[in-house]
Image (cartoon, rainbow, N blue to C red):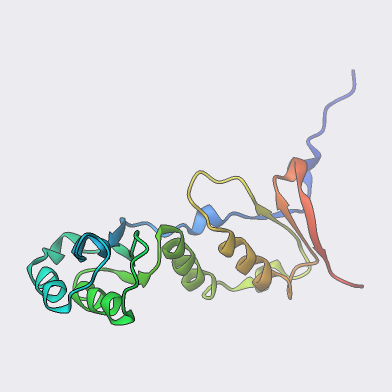
Length: 168
């Protein structure tokens, strides 16, 4: 009987797993509609009073995304004012939703990596993840890898989708 050889394990593929870079920390989303009249109307005096009376300490060391879940048209300063209240407590504050927060965190992290380690290598960007890795993170890592990698694939080694191959 012929020996079964695991070609994937023996290949020179470098796996780039975005989960390895997943920023640890509590993610919280704040919906400003809770401070609007009937969820739609911003009355400045009431809005400021609600923010003044809110317990901001509960967001200590959180990653906070600020958004409005209703179709209310709110002035830009409303989110800024919430962000200012959060500044002494939150690790990071963005305008957007949870996915936007993950994308912003990955954008920060991915700019700090030295991609020269992938010079002339075949790289597979691992596709299956248990953590919420946004598509923007995959796009960014491919962008940063492209100047260095000989080839870039996406997915798992056994079923990778080719994305890029450097010209010889």
